[in-house]
Image (cartoon, rainbow over all chains, first blue to last red; front, side, top):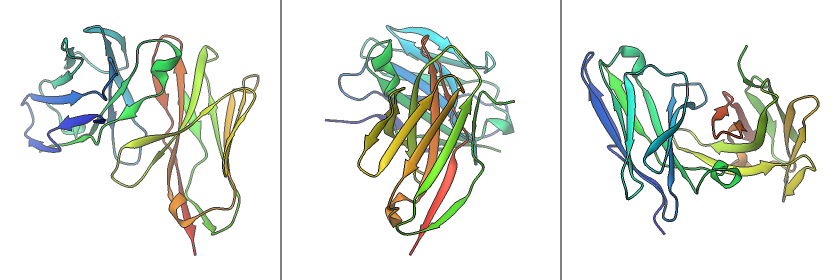
Length: 115
Length: 109
């Protein structure tokens, strides 16, 4: 039973560039949430996708956008990268909406460094 | 003020000790509560859900006090392998998850 997978594991970009991160949810899960985790802090909620639509969004600018595909996999896109975007980006999957969707399983993350 | 606040760490305890972590949340519309564990440079992993009636899983006990908007995690008989950062998570019914910044526990021989 495959868990949540993310790619790439590490990425180095320069300011102003754009980046796309990818996530495949755990088998049987259809909801994907994205988080940004800076060093020494807890994960910050970016947004959640279900049925290919953004259902919830945290306090992140429009430079952060996403997409969910029919096979439930998801992408996170960040435009016009800033130094402050350097962080660990985590993808979490869960089943459906409602109470069951709160038990989230995380992927190993993509560590993004912006120089 | 952060929506979810946790005890500042780090907690350094000897093996066999009992340690308790606290977490407070500000959104009274919060519906679900969890504790996650995160090892250094790894992803968070679900430790346990937290219910109003309290729940216990082996050496771990979680409690929720909705009136005080307070969550706790108690670890009894600490093991070296319990060393990690413990994250408190609060969810609204709409599906938004808010994590605390975590409390770091180091269990020493």
